[in-house]
Amino acid sequence: MSENKRSFWSSVPGLVTGMAGLLTGIVGLVTVLIQLNVIGGDKPGTPAATATTVANAGGTTATTEVGSFTVSPKPLTFGPTDSKVKTVTVKNTSDTASISLQPPRVTGDNAGQFSAAFDTCSSAPLRPNLSCTLKVTFAPDRPLGNYKATLQVQPAAGAVRAEEVQLTASTLLGG
Image (tube, rainbow, N blue to C red):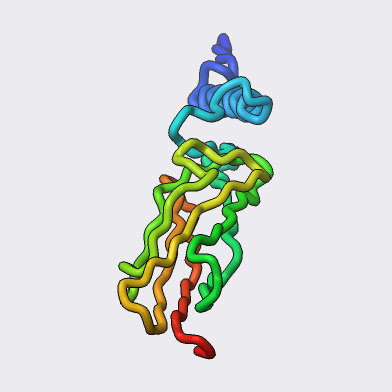
């Protein structure tokens, strides 16, 4: 009798093993190219994210690191003799990802007494470890009173959470 030996690579387990090896090699190459910033990177008007691909026995899983930021000071207080225009600093605390900001919003019961706008900040991406400022203006419509509102600083996209600054103001001396 003549034995008919088939190559391992022509069997189903051999084909699956070969495809898994090929897929792992491609994922590894793409990961290296992303880390070297050869592919991907910043596109105007969109926040950058650093993509990391992890290979495991069940396939590949892509995860994304989105930039983070802080806002200060918190809270922001306007006293009776203070300037009616103050600045809030936004700092991108990420080492790798840029963030884009939506125009700031003021909410709450006395929101109409305050306004906020880009100063040195803009909707253009804020690069890692850099800061910019927002201008907050207090313009009360009555001479005496205490006011409260909330400044919301929201990224344009991504999973980064909004930051809030409590705004308080008083036009009463001693209050």
